[in-house]
Length: 320
Image 1 (cartoon, rainbow, N blue to C red):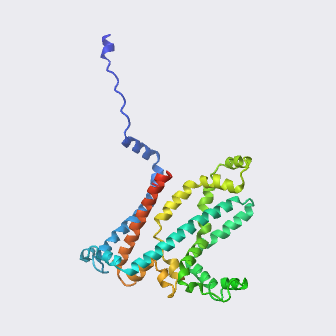
Image 2 (cartoon, rainbow, N blue to C red):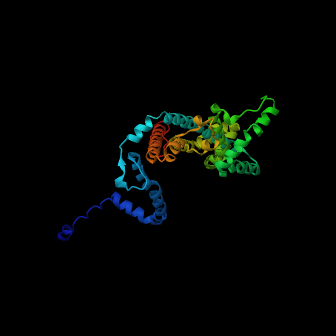
Image 3 (spheres, rainbow, N blue to C red):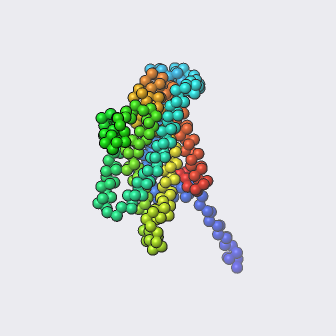
């Protein structure tokens, strides 16, 4: 009895904390972490270190001077930016072309992917996919040349419309300032529709074929199958891409506008990026150009978080 009473009770095992779980996971996935190190370094070097250059927006930057010898001006560059009427014109053009591109460039690839998914002849489907992908790999310089030639007075579009007796005389499409936004949007849709549809086609391959078989047994036609099976099946992909597109709403670049514009439509073609190029870098106003880019980045972040919050509350889907 004395020996039994001398035995000390066993201490309960301490639950493993978060630190132990982290190190155990790290050890189990060490090769994956090692493989990711080069990419983390790449992102840090090319995405985070350049943020140091944002300090130029608060200086009157002069090349050749050291960082400590630059003249600090606070928010003067931003005040100058927000008092410039040209800035608001560029902002209006950017938002207009962005919303047109978001509507057309987001919905048309989905419709195109839905139609491709319904094709039963695999050879014809591959040919259509290949032809639709090709414009993505053509530079905007070449695309702008094609569009300029097609829309010229003696181009193919005027010839077609005159042969169909829709118009009596040729139209100078690229000289119509009110048409410029539509031309840029249509050009971008033609170039990127096939490429943007790839991810939707990939998402459609993950839908269970038995759902379509059950729908056919119930008498559902193809359109009803697309509406009730295919679209809900790629709903998450659509929402995530929509959130990312809204985040990039204000960053539409300047290549299309720069290459397709001319002095007649210049006021309709100037975007924020083109405004930063013309009135910032080309004039040696590096601080002013940096202030414009900071404005673009801040607005993009706000749009991204706003869109993500709205979709998270309404559809329970988000990217973070």
